[in-house]
Image 1 (tube, rainbow, N blue to C red):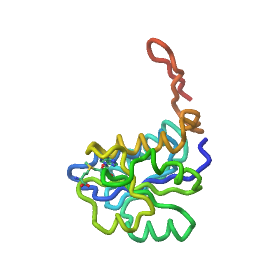
Image 2 (cartoon, rainbow, N blue to C red):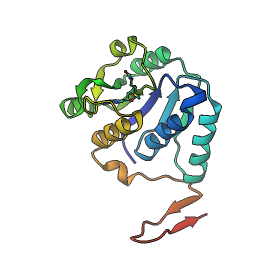
Image 3 (cartoon, protein in one colour):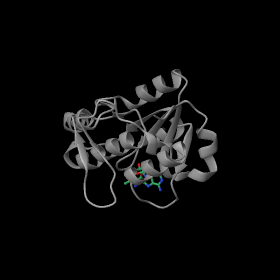
Length: 176
Ligand code: SAM
């Protein structure tokens, strides 16, 4: 398992149009070694989809909705954590990841549409995964892989009802 505590704070989620992307932000975070996701909107549908994956595929990933983003950031910092905001306007990932990596607790903020302006000042690091626009899923995946330096591939997911045996051709699964 990854030794650092990384959680995601998803802001700007609109239940009527972002459910699929936000669910994929959570699933990406879980698969790539993060411990959980705070969602700064009320959406039990996202929480249920992610909880369902956790129940079947194992591990202890949390998903909490209805979070107030300012309070979440304040509490994270009060507990000694560092806050990283992923934005194409920030410093490029290769230039800052070495400074971020030694931190034991990292909260990674990703937006949906335009993020509130105060986020840039609340974050300890505004980090760009290239200075080109793309998506919260791709930026998060690249950030986590750079942060964990590939160790996330060794993550284990205890208590899984189903797991995959990697094979060159076809599909092999184990169900418990
Ligand atoms: N126009 C929006 C803005 O100005 O914030 C872009 C929103 S984008 C679809 C959604 C999220 O993806 C952003 O809030 C950011 O977290 C992430 N993102 C997109 N491109 C990025 C990049 N190049 N580097 C880091 N994060 C990025």
